[in-house]
Image 1 (cartoon, rainbow, N blue to C red):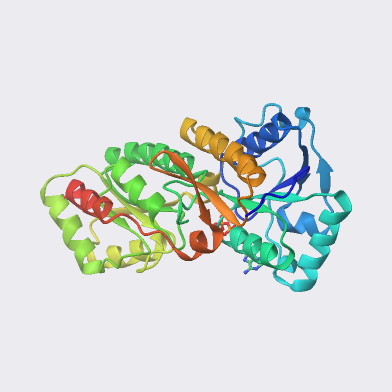
Image 2: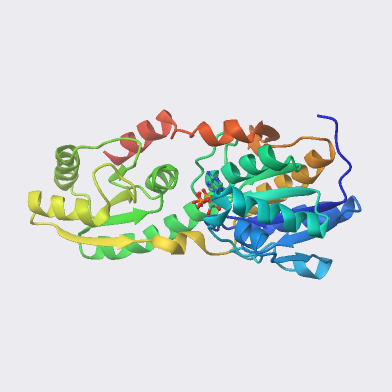
Length: 328
Ligand code: ATP
């Protein structure tokens, strides 16, 4: 597409927060300044766009944010943006501020909104994959995923200490309503006895067999990782079923919950967010619109948002196999 002249870019974070969103905002804003553009922060995602919570950003706004978790622009879920009236209000506010391009940092929902908005109003926009779920096509990694995995593994290491001391069986629930990426990584990275993910059904009988075999092998601790959207239920439900089958086990459940969203971004997330942020601004200047910037084989690539949101990424079959081999 023939590039439009861009003078003012608005940046927002939307949907679930993810570590590294601040690093992405900073990179977008710094790159904008580098290319002599004016940069605007749209606070609280699409909700702030509708309510005119929009402010010009200066260098000082992005000082010391790279290393901080969360998002200083704040994030929100906006039901009004799902309506044509809401999106019209949002567009009017962008016009009022003279914002002529957007960078949207968020998950598949946020990018779906961005795609719709682009089709309705044609405002040049680029999405960045900001979600701990790692479930977007068009990128090997999403911003926040690596940090969330590190957080989960660090927590599971601590649980392992108490599990070993008391010969306990722990069910640890990690985030992932529809995607098992955190679970499978945490499972491999923390030597789990089994990993249950939304994409695959593991019958309770098979889990019982696996745990019995481990008892025979005199394993001193057992940790089963369960993604919150697991096909056989969450950790509490599965623990109750196992207790019926294996009553001699001292069973405990830990739900890691929102702690997986917090914390300083890992080195990988900082670098990923920084690269994608710069490429987003350059992409807009080159006329790349309605695309998501992602990383594939360590190279930044632009994928049409329509493809990134429909092509729900699958957990790698090799990862399943490896998790299974290493847990027996
Ligand atoms: P996460 O993956 O962390 O949950 P997300 O970006 O997928 O993040 P959602 O709550 O699905 O989070 O979406 C964020 C916001 O994007 C919604 O609150 C809504 O404002 C907007 N959005 C999502 N889907 C649509 C849609 N179909 N049309 C318009 N706007 C949408």
